[in-house]
Length: 110
Image (cartoon, rainbow, N blue to C red; front, side, top):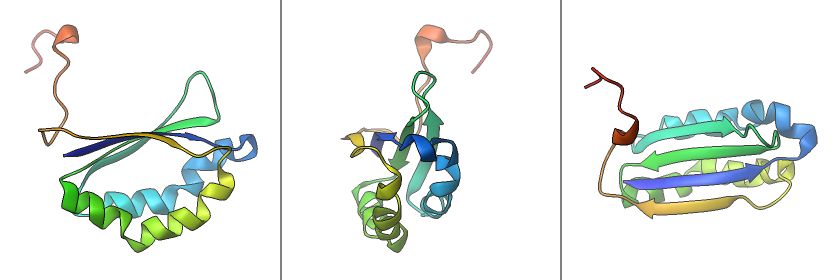
């Protein structure tokens, strides 16, 4: 799968509204057949920073995502709300879902 983590620093005036601002893009991406997950989190230390964790089934699904109309629309509509260019980590990993964190295993959880 293609595993991507990106940090978005949002303008302070838009930080509280970011989930609404990105809602159409988020919903459309989650509806893509090759999207495994597309989840936003807000930093506990910096309220203007959002972290996006996303995964796509394979290179073909990742390519379909960046070639989609909703991605092109996001390229036009999201940057005016950003304070800086997002930072990204993009890797291919040999799995299709989350692995369990054995170092913090919960007893009885299979």
